[in-house]
Length: 318
Image (cartoon, rainbow, N blue to C red):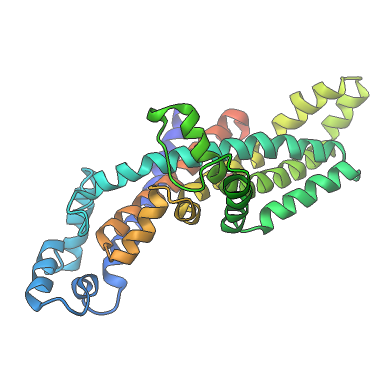
């Protein structure tokens, strides 16, 4: 197991190197002078020159890259031009609401998606199966912002049960926190639940057709035992992959939901930083999101090897 983990860690190195190069390149892919673009057309040449010096743009590109990379390794992602504060502090202040929203949305997606997929697979070809699949199709088709507006209209404006916007951290009480986070979590998690339900159904049906399932049935094993002990375990790998991929999507794709519900998270920070041309913060955000994707996939690989030792023995190629 230790050797397998070491191989996966070493495999991360080139991936993270590409991520670092692309993130660093953000400052250099924009046309013209990056400092002039950030400050706008009304900025004086003195301010542009000062910002170029502050950003290190006067140095050779290779030196800039390694200087930036060395600082990033030490947790220094630069200073926000708008907040005049370290980017790391700015990111951490926005990370809490996004993580809370993503975790609750993903929990809802798993609680709804996995049982719905199992139910559809068990009832293949029946009205129950069709109902679940139609619900999954709707979940995938409806954009999160449209569902968010619909929820706000019903539960916020018409019924008055939930606040239509804002955020209350858990420190202010779990009841208040859940009232504020409920609608954003449903709006964000609906599509993920639909994807998980479809993948669970497909994986379960594929497992049902395997010979060992027919053998288990012929041996007289109870249906629940065949379903939950044999079928679900062997169908777990593609389901886990989907859950891991949707978690990364949730963290990166919360921008729209956070903007609609006025939640001060990473999504709102991205939108506001683009409007403010705070490129240093955008650079830090891109790096953080990319690294989170890589780490989530790394954890999925490790979980694969735990659930299916064949992955470990084949070096992760299966």
